[in-house]
Length: 502
Image (tube, rainbow, N blue to C red; front, side, top):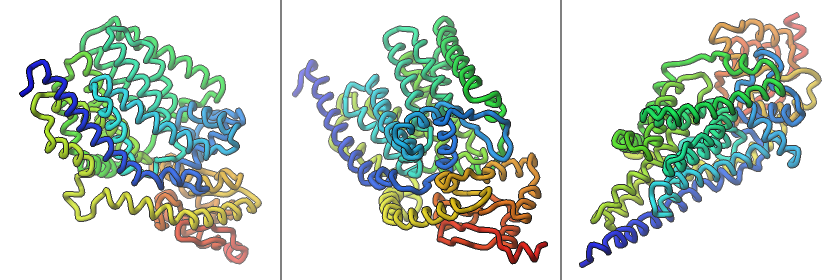
């Protein structure tokens, strides 16, 4: 029998054993799934469509060329400038913007996981609970969108600034301070990736819900001042068309929205329900309200933006992060009660991450083994992908004239920027803002010295949504294949077909 004074210590020791066991299991899973994703970061091949797009702009920033010198035409720079300048400046030391962006993204992922753990530690004394939260986010990211692990993309870098802001805000709330110093960090996050709004809005709504006008005005004022300074610097350094690029409309699809939201809910439903219940119970608690509001806003924004053309699964990163944070805090709250920290419940907690996603139960193929196998298979296929990529780069480099690439990094590595961005042009054609006949006419007149079709992020599928059917038909009539691989084709003008069309 334990006396009353000894009970808290016994509960703490039991909880510590639970979290240490869960941390060990999560470390194993994250390592097994993640090792090929990390090691592939040195491969000279495009893993995501945005890699080549980002690399070109990072090179511009490294050469101190303005990013928004002209309004959108056949291309657009609709990301804010901060990540381009950070990667561009660092690449002056490393010599390669894409590799620099990949390694910075990996470092940012580690930093995000550490900050997730730090957030949890503000609410849970067990140190392994914070480690579990960081590992849980890493595991879910590896399985939800593995092609964003070790990829040249600003999302995770922006989330570092965003989480630093939320951590600073929560520490200030815990200490009864104002928290205005966190606002400039949120501004840095938005100027790194413009969709990172959930956590600053959650913090602001927590102040608004308490009618804490003094803190709210100071906090908002500091954020607006920082944003205004960043906006002024952007206009001075990068050109006058910043807003014209950032506010350019894009097509939306209700079907895409329902598909993305449905996939997320099928996979994360247990954690979404847990987060919703926890947020409802804690939104009036001054210390926990910022987390509750951030969880709500993260999901509302992800659902609202899920149908945008080009919007990918990364739109749910903040929602997944808040699911991980709140799930661990909710479990810690549960085990903090006397008698609940039993071996059986500890085992259940350790098994929960392995139940990711829920579709394991609904479909015969388990997501967890599939993630392990697919990562290893991709790693084994890398040498062939690199050889095909190098062959395409060589052909494009020899082309004497403008080229077009669906694999934008291939054009970038060849030193020949794509004459237009296929994704953006097709998006604007769907909005009736560009005439598809203009681009078909360019093919028919053999304006391009080479056209590359296909992308490694879609595997061996040549069915593309980034070119119109008429464009591809004209390409087959007036160009000939110079390179054919399972993933990519490179077309060059056909003299015989040119004479025939003439």
